[in-house]
Length: 325
Image 1 (cartoon, rainbow, N blue to C red):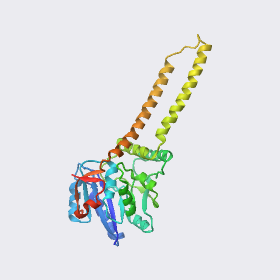
Image 2 (cartoon, rainbow, N blue to C red):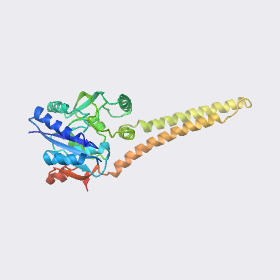
Image 3 (cartoon, one colour):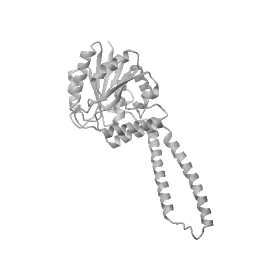
Image 4 (cartoon, rainbow, N blue to C red):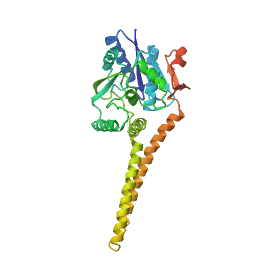
């Protein structure tokens, strides 16, 4: 019997983890009885009762597992690390808030059985805030034009991944993983399934401007050279334009010495403009340096505080890119 692993990253999801586990189990009992499941909740240092509920679920069902992070390791590292800990023939990554529909899991599995190594969900519409959805759409279009690697629009990571793909992720040993980019970059055959993203069932989203900015910068620094090259091109153009203006200004001053005052306003405007452009590109270069630094430091993706219902004999074999405390 084949095993389907389900990875559910959690952060303050006390109202969702138990209903989600029930929905997943029911989906397997009704639509996937020929498969067994492994349900892994990886908690990113929740401040509510999420861990307490996960403990109880693990005590009641041996096929439900838990990993408790020692601290919050971010929205990318935690789910990525959870995927590396699975033992199934394929792994499904989904959010805990029901915005990734449970009823799509059987469809994913059927497509996987047809030979696709990756089956992913693509949001065709969303019941989330319309402004946020529009901003995300603009972001995806921009990154798609700038990136050197194919970018998948409205893909959140929700999907099914074959064991071979998971093993490649283990071999990558990437300290700053960006799954959405990796899926497109590695070139595995994939199936895209459109869906409408429902509203969050309960609780509040932990996403904020900083988290979204962090996601955007990780994508830019990992998959595009345009930022740095744009700085070089823009600097060259500004230098050329400045030289032309300087020559024109000198000629005009020599021809109309008394009627062509120097004036401070044009100089101040030009200095402020060039200064702001320089600061912008220095910040952009800083983002690239931060990304390089994170890769060079090779810190663990996650430091575990505790894990539940794992076979201790296989701990060293299965545990990748993480440490226990």
